[in-house]
Amino acid sequence: MDLATLTQLILLVLRNLNFKPRKHKLEDLALAILAYLLEYK
Image 1: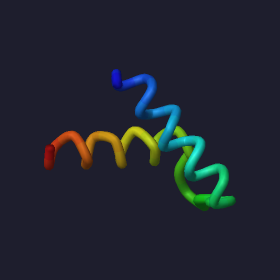
Image 2 (image 1 turned 90 degrees about the vertical axis):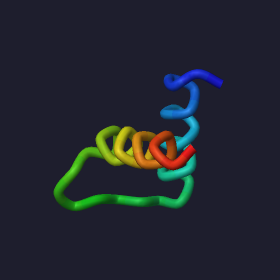
Image 3 (image 1 turned 90 degrees about the horizontal axis):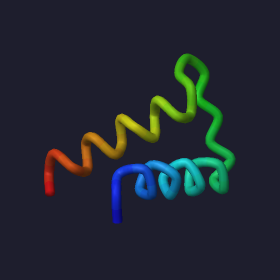
Image 4 (image 1 turned 180 degrees about the vertical axis):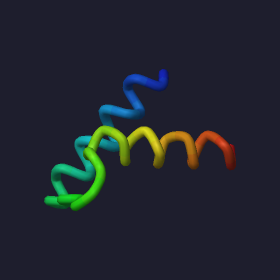
């Protein structure tokens, strides 16, 4: 899986959970989660 696919997958999961952040964009949170996961791989 490449990074774009992983980001889209995280976005899909967050949207399906009906996650609505107040201060940040959903895309920014997806990228932050992806960066966190890749750091601990």
